[in-house]
Length: 89
Image 1 (cartoon, rainbow, N blue to C red):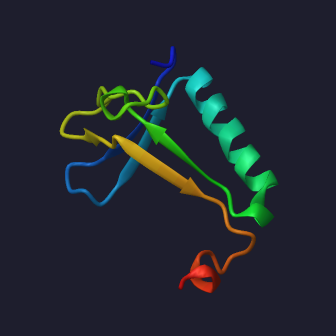
Image 2 (cartoon, rainbow, N blue to C red; image 1 turned 90 degrees about the horizontal axis):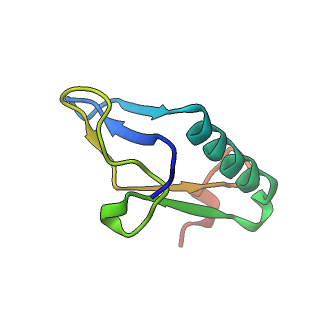
């Protein structure tokens, strides 16, 4: 498991996403986002998992009451604002 804090949590109503991290966890996320953005023409993506789902990138302890941690976060990078639309089959 990572030695930092990074959670993606859904609020009690499942309509809000909360990202909690310590400085090390947020820097790690920022580096991942920069790497994906730099490779946009290649349509990169990456996965973040909790330990329960076989990874070590995400913490699994909710930081707020009545929140639930996401066990899998998949981040895509598209080359422009049209996103996935031109690439759907």
